[in-house]
Length: 219
Ligand code: CTP
Image 1 (cartoon, protein in one colour):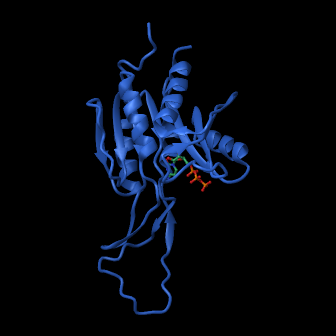
Image 2 (cartoon, rainbow, N blue to C red):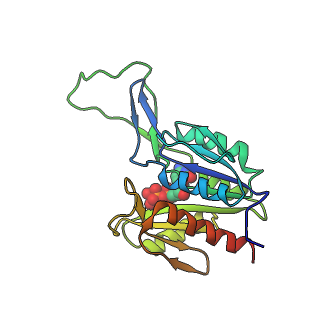
Image 3 (cartoon, protein in one colour):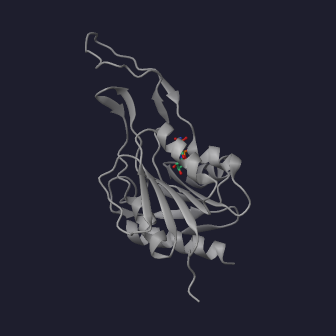
């Protein structure tokens, strides 16, 4: 019988988060959500029901087994993940969550009345780490890491810190990998294994990730 995710619930975060500064400005990043959406389609094609918690993106889910909950900020993404996490069999953190948010959000547009402007930032909740603390037996979690140096070591530390089963490492040293590209070159790091892949289209990268998760869940 072909390996599948029939009957499995996958919870997936994708895209950037936007952290408001005032009613017209925000702190964000260049994530397009492509990797997360490609993963959602791939899981759905393999029989899973997918709950996709997506930050602001122009993308649309195609497969009918994907249910999208749109969010804007890290706090909103966290709330939705908390709501769905207990029921999920597999949780994938593909979102590029803003690490910091403005400490106060101005209720009126900030005027340019000084030569300098200082915005105080506070750390956002770490959605993956919070889930790692409450993960139960049988749940499988996957995170992403984008590193520029000491890639393997940094990724392994994140695997431990966030109690992940797998971390997908994109190196910024690889041309064609990461933000605003249709291609990606990944290395998948697990506690006892490291698997390196070639530069590929994001759909194919998603397939590689999903295949490895299938293998791990059907040993
Ligand atoms: N993540 C999350 N919530 C956050 C920050 C990150 O869920 N507030 C998840 C991401 O979705 C990704 C992984 O954690 O799966 C990335 O880890 P992180 O430590 O944020 O990576 P970097 O941003 O690369 O961290 P650093 O800048 O510390 O290297």
